[in-house]
Length: 189
Image (cartoon, rainbow, N blue to C red; front, side, top):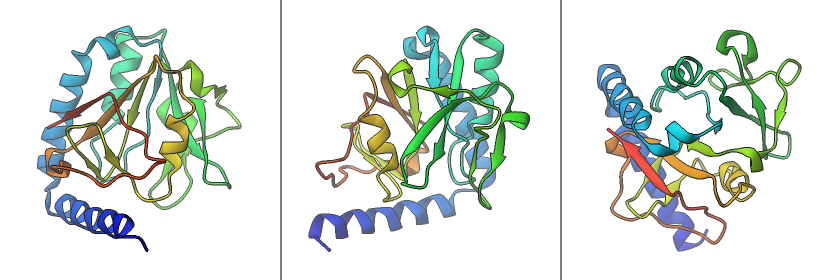
């Protein structure tokens, strides 16, 4: 393992420990603040096709974001990722959380491709991206599979790439590799 990969592994462990120490109440309060900040951005207000994800328990809640899109932006398409066998992500439009999303493992919820139409990544105006760690330069520390980096590489240059995270996930500087895709801006609380 290279020294850069070792540093990323250490940062992942540290981020997981920080998240584990955060209470459910603190996560809920921060998630509400993140939603408020997101709704105030021009990227959110102008987007017509949004990439979102069903958050893991350790991540900022995304169900309220989906609900806000449905209520405030009824003509906006919301696309969720589905992990393929080759570990790449395909996007599918989700119109109803309970009907269109299904558990694919004990914690991961993904769109059901039998009922959700596919969305070309190049059609996204805005993508909200999860991660374990982030820094002020827009660098993101994922979970180590590279799936989001491969998806981000397929997006239109006009697509706004936004990282959502809890403040405890911020690092002064993250280690990056050539394949790591930067984000345009970050929202955290």
